[in-house]
Image 1 (cartoon, rainbow, N blue to C red):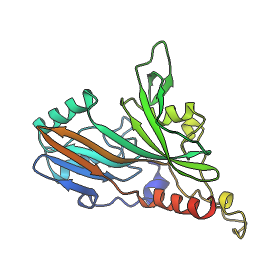
Image 2: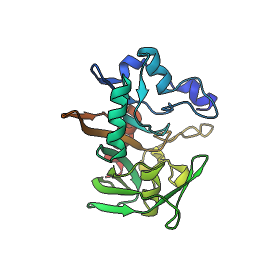
Image 3: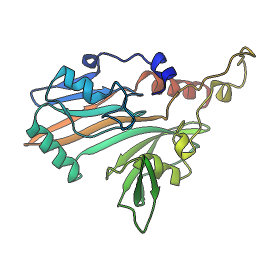
Image 4: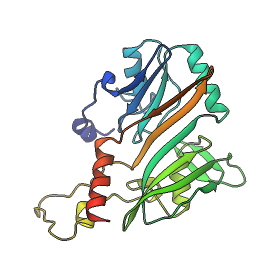
Length: 247
């Protein structure tokens, strides 16, 4: 997070992020602009540190990109961490993400099966020869004139998987500059009646890429868990503006 972003973003209390807690698990609705784990370049706040202040033995079971919001699982003991990790490793955790993408795209169980090569330093590419298997299923949820709300179901868990798989379909996520996604400005969609001061720079409706971890479900020790996270304010606001001005 840049210094400007740090000043603009107010970190919520960890307790306010919790959507479920029991003897073994803490489940939160992760806010955007906060890393899941410690980053190489440093940073004074991340979800792991906040979780450990709340519960000393907490361990993050998986990770979300810093800009991605939504369901994040945190184990309260080593045994739960082990069990959940096994479920992820065996691809038995069902993960549903929602993304707002550029263009109108009709995806009906579209399967993108393109290997991803992790080149390090958060750089990945599609590489059929050297990449690792990566599979995502996409379904369109809501259509606008110039955008689409899409459900994304990653079967594997490669870095940037949803983002790069959508980009291969010429459907980059709104605001995802790494994959040529462009931000949405109110002046773009509200062409009539939109005025701004000449000396004022317009900010995008959403100041990150539009990806949200909506739902996670899995079973451990015969008990089924299912968790769902509401959209954060910025994601909900963008959808509201698109519904109003781009329908």
